[in-house]
Structure formats: C-alpha cells, structure tokens
Figure 1: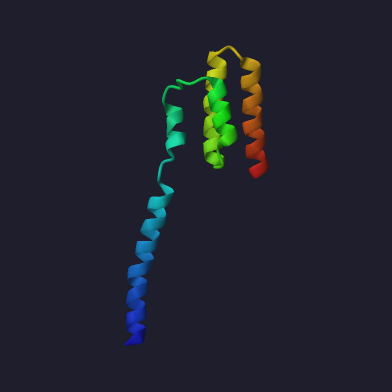
Figure 2 (figure 1 turned 90 degrees about the horizontal axis):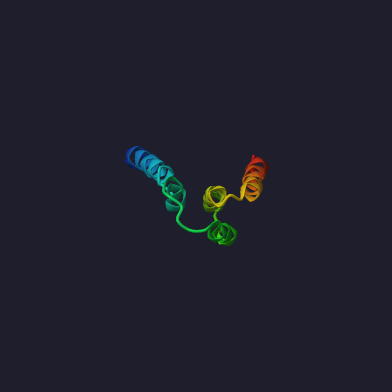
Length: 94
C-alpha cells in the first residue's frame, strides 16, 4: 500500500514540479523588457540605476539603455566604454 501511494505521489509531483520550473524560467524581467521600448531618461540616469541595482541582468539592461542614450547624446566614446564594460563583465562570468 505504501509503495503504491509513494509511486502515485511521484507521478503527481514530478509533472507539477516540472511545470512550475518551466513557468519560472519563462518569466520576463520588466527591466529587460524596457530595452525594447524608447529610452526617455538621460544616460546619466541609466548609469546611476545600473550602479544601484543588485541583479546582474538588471545592471546589464540599464547599461544597454545608457549606451542607447549616450549614442543619442553624441557621446560615442562613453558609449563605447560602457559597452566594453558590459562585454568584459559577460566574459568574466563565462
């Protein structure tokens, strides 16, 4: 009886756990989604936000928004430096 109950629990628990895991993996980060939209703030604002955030994905998203605004503000040198920082950070994670 206990073996049948244990087997039934596994049959119910495993698919539920997999479904929860998959749904968590497909969630969208709102900061990352904001990259698709127009960047309305200044580059300085996005650089400050990148420095303040703790999440690595959010930091990269804010840095990319800063790069977009730096290019809009004709600050190509700063944009290139910021983009280099992103690439360096990504390479260090690998």
